[in-house]
Length: 507
Image 1 (cartoon, one colour):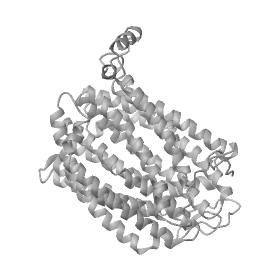
Image 2 (cartoon, one colour):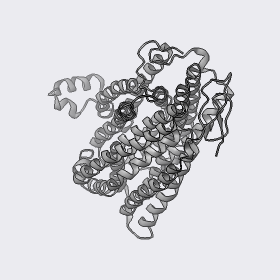
Image 3 (tube, rainbow, N blue to C red):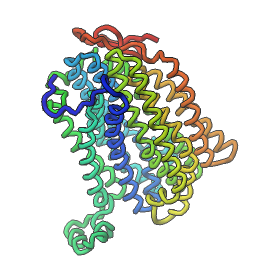
Image 4 (cartoon, rainbow, N blue to C red):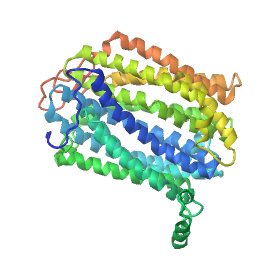
């Protein structure tokens, strides 16, 4: 382990707590905002192609986010192990954990990419896309291209998670900024090509556009072009991130031997990561289920719902960022045996996010039509805007509850209690949300409006359930040992054990 170079880690185990939490979380929020920027840029430029293209993205994202979310859970395992070992002073173990996480998640990304590519046609039909339609053809090309690029997409997530556990959230932000700038710059050309591209008109470069088209004849790759642009820009950022880890310039220094898989650490990653993967993927799976329910009302409803969920994903980014910050604060403080400080960090984050999202809810409610209208033009734009605005006005009221729930889940994950977080996610997103959405949409005949109401009601119920468990305090029980053991001790439960930095079941 080397701490030479530019170590931007935030100290969260001593001194004040609220300010370090904010300093740690704000770059995560901004990084996540930039990640949503990929999707918003795609939606904006694909929206120039009409309603069919936007509907295709909605179908595709329902599948892609499910797969990505499942893999991110194993990145959470890397965050937790790095954070708790750092808090406990086990610095010599961190590079080994980091290298193992990169290799393990890399292999998973290849497997998911191959399986996803093959199953894409079946998955699209399952969630309501009709073969032979333009929506289906667009979605098929986009989704399969994204699956081919999965290793590049996952690689950056690994880098971000490992540095987050170390306490450095600024370096991933800088890389993500460069990546998004590149994506935004190339998106319109990959999607629309060099003919009738509004970018040239904006800058008065119609003559250059004509010359480029005459030279290349490039009409763009339509919706698939958005996937190409995303993979290229994320892949470059991931490459730089891995190089920084190898060079040791960000505090963690990897050697070739750190990448060789060992059964002990792999079992730790699986023990923590599998429940976290299920927990995180339930959100995406819930969107997939709700997309299928909304599809009953037709492709226009799917397009409106798709844009609405993209806006929601942007609005709740502060909550997701604080939740990831809470993972680090809880992990490092429990590793340092500072239980009360870990709890204070959770309550502080919950208060911060409640105030923040209350203001966002008001703005979204007042300007729902204008917000949705930004992302759709052309045929069917009016109907799509109306449905998307209805979604925002209904679900937006529940943003505060959803945000606090994310923070509570971050506390559970940071302590290593990923099975607890998984349980509440399953109850909320897989049981309550589909049941309420279906019950209001079909038996009560409310259609898409019923789906939106079921979504909002679920956000209220799950934060009450998870909050009551949080107040019990049992989630703070085991932590890693201050003294590193000679080798990882495989675990079998939620919490870090008191021997050898392993895990044991204390529930």
